Amino acid sequence: MNQQRLTQVILAPVVSEKSNMLAEKRNQMTFKVLPNATKREIKAAVEMLFNVKVDAVTTTITKGKSKRFGRTMGKRSDVKKAYISLAAGQELDIESAAASADKE
Image (cartoon, rainbow, N blue to C red; front, side, top):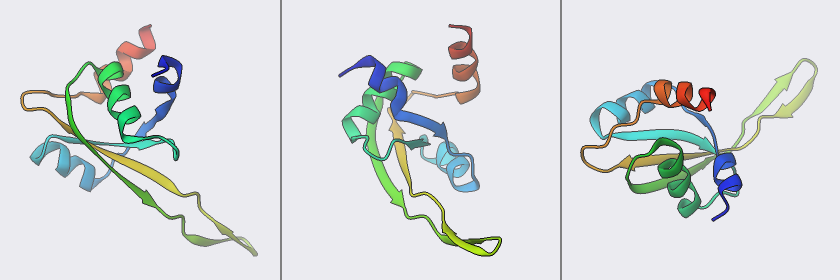
């Protein structure tokens, strides 16, 4: 797989009560990913960027809601999320990983 593509697959971590609960109880991390990213690409990207072993990847597509923006009706963007299950004994710290990526 192309390394340039793998660096663009993961858009952002999802920070919510559900994602925090999954991280604590099931050792899973949640990320927003490109809409056309495959599970294999997501797994390779996480392993390359964070130097961890990934057991499984589950993806969901959340459809955007219709919302009113002033007088006009609009639609929020669809979002694809990836739930990453880490191998036993593996840990992923997003803050330290982001700091080390900024230094490079």
